[in-house]
Image (cartoon, rainbow, N blue to C red; front, top):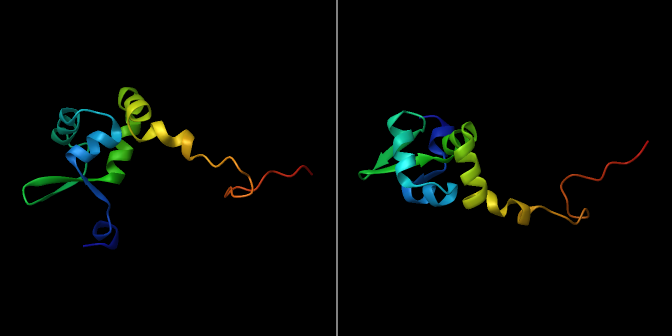
Length: 94
């Protein structure tokens, strides 16, 4: 087992549905089509977060749901507005 597989961040089906603003049936269809990576722990799906992110960027409807009802709705609030603490220094004119 590789280090990347051992340290993979996994979420349950219901957690993924809440995080991405989609119905759990949508995720089950994606699982059935083989679009998501997962492991089964004690009879429950554990979805790889990285594959969820890649999947959520492929289709417009899922992307919109993620941005409007899922984790994307808080991105604007997370943006650092104070340039003193911003990881990107302000551009200086030459």
